Length: 197
Image (cartoon, rainbow, N blue to C red):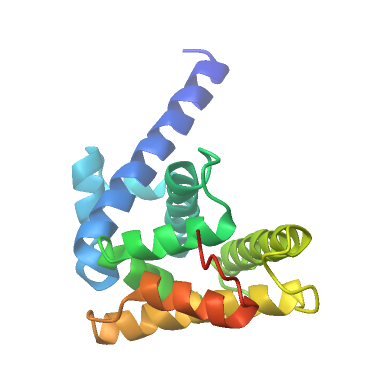
């Protein structure tokens, strides 16, 4: 096999590992998932699985990036929703994948360490979500749906904080309506008469 063919096979295997890990973590959660289980479902040994990642923390960061890519494809790429509608849809979906919420929250706490492998993911993730939300505020200001005097960057920071905080509360009390609370908070913050829609 050529070096190029070997590289392509390695990329495909890494993508397969991430797809399987995403499903296992969604089902079993951060604490309930062993990397041996992920390796078994992929059909490789644990050392074989870890060959594709520098450490388990790097694997966790890759799983979170994969989760964002899947969520983007499902909730935003179709173009029928803006960032606020997409964020609300993701929050609604998160109640179906408690294990990924658990992984996200656990790794979010670890990201406070500047040296932790997940920090880069969270910096990129929060920056992208904030930028998208601020753009929605500006677009809705331009169309007259949102008051011109509202600071888009402030609203974006608050919405990200609300989304993450609601996930924490939901893990403690699954009756919390993450999507509904986020929709109501948006309406209160920006005075958008059309709320999320």
